[in-house]
View (cartoon, rainbow, N blue to C red):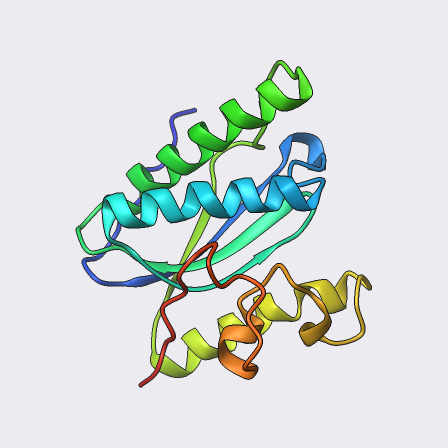
Length: 163
């Protein structure tokens, strides 16, 4: 069965999620998360997309992003996942698929829904019972919106969403 063609809109905002193959941990250690953020930052600079929110879990990642050209989300995600997969395979002497299928993308319509989506991904570590409050999890963009202390500063630039 053929895959459905993804339809993207210019300057639309999307909730992107990617998961490790067979739900395996692909962002196992802090250094893996830093490597993923560095990869994300590299392609953010290359493609010029806006990143409004993120949460990196051990076996998946959530991103809220806006591309600046129609159809660019697929190219961006292909570049990010391929580049990180190569690093992961090399580090862990791993063969096979790193990511489970294609990434998921959901169009976010409306400013309020964008903020709701960012809040949803910030609460992902709480729902997973990893922390009691989003402020306690260093691998999300929560601190960009809610604190003066930003553990991601210097690793990746988050574009604050405001309306």
